[in-house]
Length: 319
Image (cartoon, rainbow, N blue to C red):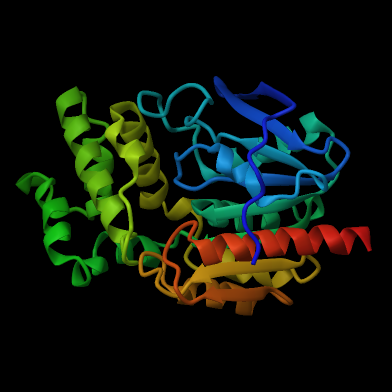
């Protein structure tokens, strides 16, 4: 079975000015003359950890990893910044700006969770820039998906969802819960913002915990990270990533010339399997890989499947 490749360090990095006062941190690893690949991390707002580098053979790939607007090492911090210039369209433009900056003609796109939504959106906007796509823990960030996570999953975690609901003041209970939290996270009172971020991240740790042995995300203990993360997630989710219902799924029908592998855990109840299944059905030639014992995120079987996919695309290019 495949495993992640050993840890590696970047051979180049920098901050790219993408406009609107934003600077995006990027790094390149692996073989400078290798097959280009770009990583789209999850969240929105998670930032790119060093583990993302390890999904690729460093002898074969030129690996580009970057922190999306407002998170990780990019500036300004979305925990305190205005978010009006932080939308899916802005992120797509940033990816293209980075591609041009690095002199890449076409690259493989790897994305997970929110990064899968962004990967589909970017590929539909710039199919000429994409050689292959590998997505795992697939989402498309539709209103249906958001309402499932923030409302319907009460059926799976009723007590935990009640605590999420109780974090919303009575005066705001008529709002969608995603809208209420977005407003609380933008409150002028820092104590209100911090409590909302704690409550939101406690729910984030709950709705993905569908496989025995799940460990809570230690990053949520950091008040700076959790506010940044919660603000970006609620901002993107309340707007359904700024796409009309079904728009990304319909657009996938035009991507038949771009090979894609979609990898999803059968136990991912946070983003149910029908999301990946429907996207694979809509994307001509896309391969769906279902990992029976995996939930949402980087489980062993999911990691194996991602590495097999990137190895396979590297080998196909060499052939």
